[in-house]
Image (cartoon, rainbow, N blue to C red; front, top):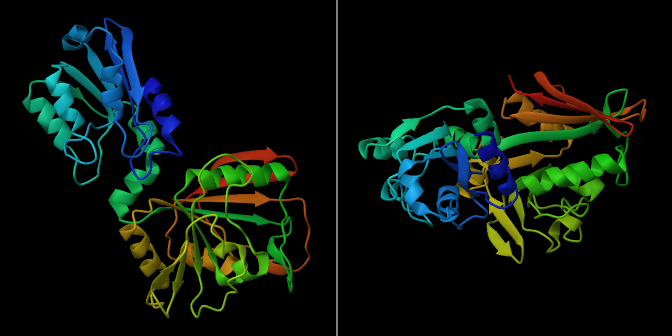
Amino acid sequence: MNRCLELASKGLDSVSPNPMVGSVIVYENKIIGEGYHKGYGKEHAEVNAIASVKDTSLLKDSTLYVNLEPCAHFGKTPPCSNLIIEYKIPKVVIGCVDTFSDVNGKGIIKMEKAGIEVSIDVLERESRELNKRFLNFHEKNRPYIILKWAESTDGFIAPKNQTEPFWMTSSNSKKLLHQWRAEEDAILVGRITAKKDNPSLTVREVKGKNPTRIVIDKDLKLSKKLNLFNNEARTIIFNTIKTKEIDSNYYIKIDFNHLIENILQELYKQNIQSLIIEGGAKTLQSFIDKKLWEEARIFTTNTTLAEGVKSPSIKGEIIFETIIEEDQLEIIKNE
């Protein structure tokens, strides 16, 4: 199962909105086949694992391991549970159940009815952690939400009366942030951050896909000359005036009463499974106050500001700490 998880993780930046899945086939305690889901719309892990077996006659005496329940429905590809049954694989070991409504135990039931011995919840915690975005999306009907900010040693997120873009963290921290962006579906900022920092919200420092950029601009006051509105990536602009698509910019009119909930509902409709929120402080705090977040990734720099915009206030379990050059990084999980 550890090998399944290792294989599955190779699809981190290419399979969304599908889950990351790896599969291993074992005959007499030896691996005879393995595969993983390489990209959205492509063959699933079980299909690739079976296809890699040189002598398919061994499958009827083998065990198939997979970190997520084999699918039971026709999507872009046929059901993997059907293929397992077709090759008469007698035993299947599963990391965790797929809680997506089209699956959610149906694959297990189908295989068991065909006489296959099925074991579940092997390395369940690790399997769920790997696909936390996918599972959260289908269980909570909203994206997996990651909060990110950098703060000074004295607890400020930005200087007072900021008039130009401001960056506190080291170059290595910036590169790590760009890697995080490449791993998520979307990234969100508020109007003030867009105006003052003029961010591109792309992955310039690493190789990978740009996330969908999202900005909250109630009255459409932002200048169209800002980097957010170039064609380097798709941008969603939540506002109260219009719904219209212009080049790579998609304006969506929503009700600003219950703003956060309405944004998340719209992102769910668009199959956006994960979201990084990069600020500013008011936007971040609004998600924190409503307890609509899963992780917070906080850089504490060696900069002292003395006064400015106070950092968000957050409570949770610290699950990871490290030092990147002169920056301290904490990752906090919502309890």
